[in-house]
Length: 132
Image 1 (cartoon, rainbow, N blue to C red):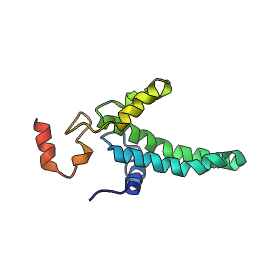
Image 2: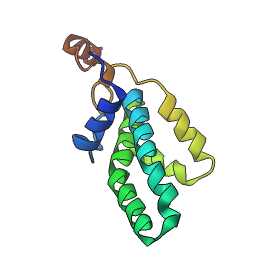
Image 3: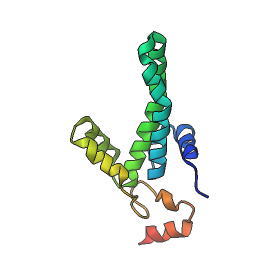
Image 4: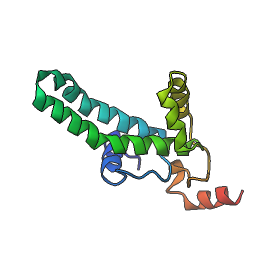
């Protein structure tokens, strides 16, 4: 049975809070990004209404920093790239490049970061992919 977007987000926030190893499907990455953005947006808008709101916005940002970073690294791992590619986000040219990596499909089978998360339930397929 396929997970809902909210389940992906909750799993990323609770069980994979600062897990930088392994791979993350596109669905997990984009749903996590969506829910973090939806939750953070009101706090960022209210930031101008006083010191308390600025502190609250900072706290929310700090809470979501590690999960958003870890899911981004795992997403790059899923495409066969190192998390070091995130450093390109600090350049203007790098933003569309990393965005392109995010929208690419998973590398089939195993790669150096682990099994394909799309086929986690099918162990026979994973074994065959590893042998080939």
